[in-house]
View 1 (cartoon, helix red, strand yellow):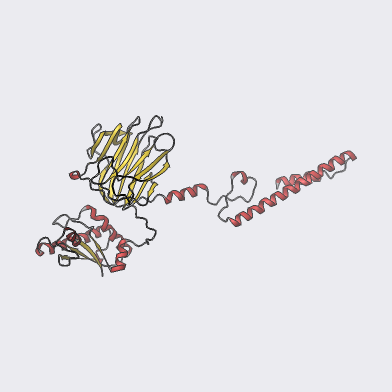
View 2 (spheres, rainbow, N blue to C red):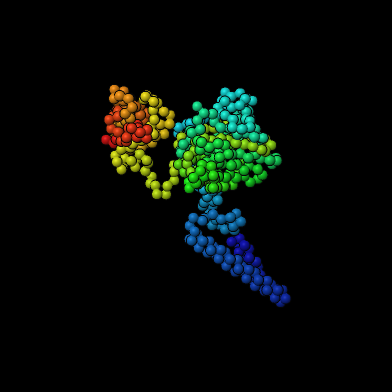
Length: 430
């Protein structure tokens, strides 16, 4: 509008009389000014028309670039910008859920600097406790370090088919003079090192960093021949800062996260995990690790045919009861094992979502031992489950413990497999 006003003023000034030559020159100048003014008006009208058409075709696209903002009084910057779109994308990839039953945890508290970490075992090389900027951690030797959690009785069968692994890791390669090979290795209980069921590899050298997963496919007969691969770029992570890494495995799905963002997503991998190792070798400086946590439970398994209904809800809808063999007790006792809480949590979640539902909690045993022992034991176990549910916020009014002993078997008590099925807890809807 400002340019149009100025051009109009110039055109008006050119209307004053002058001599013949001047009038001819001024006449030509006037014609040019008028043409320019017309073109300006036409361009403004055309630009505004295009904007209205574009807004009509793209109602969500209201923002404009800074270069167009100064030329258009109708500029509107209230629409979605690039940052909003990126945030939505990251949110979709931040679905990590830590397991609820801890198998192994090490925050390095009480450790002595220079000693080998007390909760770990050495597979190869060397590692020791260090302190970095006030944080106590494990320094994995830059030449070679391969460590594994030190588990009770030395078992190598503690992961199972649904678990999570979390840890913080720091590595400094700001001089870019050589990054180590870093791995998180998951192995079958009977497999030795270098024979992983699947492995997460870190590539932290140079400017571009990436993570890859080599895994056994479900069709493979072995537990170490990794035909499947997945790789993604991210970073930077060699910046001498602590970064959080997390792995989720659920029956067949491998998901790996860096600072909360999922970078690996494998839908169908072979199950059979038993134990794990952390590995670092090469480079110029150590790799530092702290706050390691391994737990039962994982991100929900994605199934495109699944509904929003929980496992408990589906069972109740189909049969009016939820039967489980995953609530475990100490042998001959009513003491719940820690790994039972994940299953009990499912029932608690269902009952809190459906506060009017009442359950008869039935304890069942196999036929090992006499009725004089099994009947009261089954009652005590049912009561222990009720108490655990109340501790998770369930109203005890809706729960009734009943011990059934070995009187209602569902399988053959003459086999180990049959007896295992008979040792169960049933939640009967009343």
